[in-house]
Length: 333
Image (cartoon, rainbow, N blue to C red):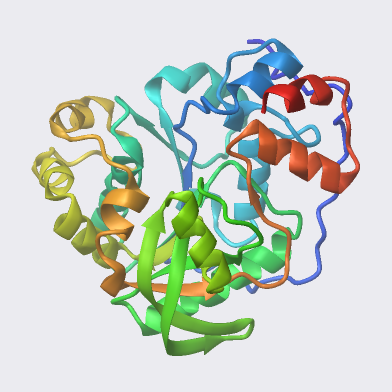
């Protein structure tokens, strides 16, 4: 099997800052890592830098580790491997096999078809609920830049504890906005609900997924937060909110035969996925149910969603990295 290539000039360039260590991992705290996207918007970067067509999460953009590998390294700080699920696609099997080697690795939830992020989140959540009905789940995209892993995961652990005391709320991690970005979701915080050490946890008054430029400018002026797409909630609350907003997905999952274990499902879920509509979790679920949400702002740390070549170049500029292909990519970003 071929070795995953590295982007030239990036070996060892990203040093992780380790300043705070969370407590021992909780055995009722599960991680879902989303790695099923095709990375279409980042495909020009991958093609220009590597001459490769693989999805971005399987590419080592910063350092020797792929984006998915860096995400799993981060998640491992707070979650046992056997309580971590990587959601991918059956057609990504070759890339997944390259990434998740060795006898011990996270559960692999290989979806039989692309039904959007709503199914990618609700399907593994329903399997966790069958095995561990009182579980708390944290959902992580696999394409983020976060250099302060321990600080970030300490915040996740603390928000998870807050969710235990407030099980009816799904908490979004919000980032301080610096520009009127139209490719992010925006969160308008509402009333005070509680505290974690880094600040308040607030209700969500409004949520907008990828708003217009005019809306994004108003959100920025009002001090609203970017949605990082990191979500923490109880499994039953996530499924209840999913039923309110995307009942066809939940109905298909409920009617599917029970799988033998987490991720052991391709024949079981094939028919269920064929029945599901395609839906985006942020737009179809979060935007539709703000009354079930809360938001906790990230502590002071760098964060970026590496969803486009422009954002990758911005992070590289911040790190003082300028590989030979960056100028060509900047012209088309």
